[in-house]
Length: 272
Image 1: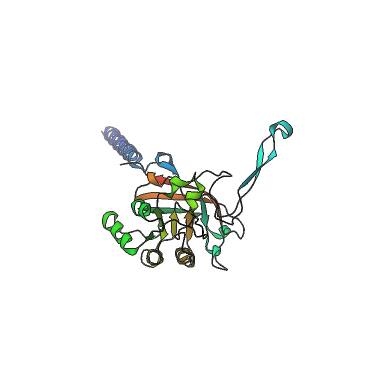
Image 2 (image 1 turned 90 degrees about the vertical axis):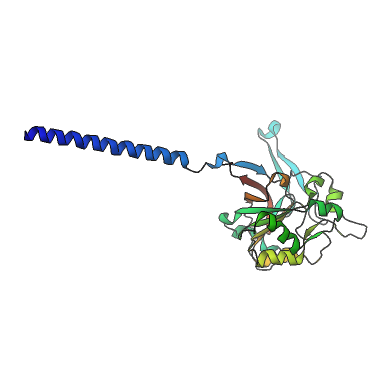
């Protein structure tokens, strides 16, 4: 009888163990099905303009030059030598651009180059006034629809200038007096974004976050004095939502550099 009892208890124990193991397997299976999607499931949007010898260049900046360095016929491989200004093409700027002693490109850690972005669309106003300056009221109106701008964001101004990239004269908008014309962040709006919304960067599809005719560069100084970054000559902004994108800024860590040409990507999470 004792032996039968032992066998019976053993069988019961095995069944219990089996049930627990089965339950754990089901739990792990459920957890696997509810895990976050991998990065490959996210939509990737390239925000980078192509680099060409005919692209718009800030007046007085170095030209973009491409020179053959090695050829298949002579060297059995192919490589070019390039010469370009740090702030040409789609590029990022670092605080030492205007702030002596500010952080340079090589001092910015990688984690600061992965940031959430919000996009403020002012195309209609920019079409009516090429010198339009974003106001605090514009920001508040945007927030009334999209919610308050999260701290730690790069705020991007979508002016529509990305469509002028292939027409350098229209993109730069230089007049007979040498004054440049494109829309940008007004001084008060930039200060508000930094002090009241904790923005860590400003971005735009023009050649400067400041309006072209702003020779005091108020928006740039506001961001650089806050130790933040600036992104300019962006593309593909029509593909971004007002909120929800995450930027990856491929800025080069040039020693002592004030930024560099950059490959900028936006990642959008998959729909639920």
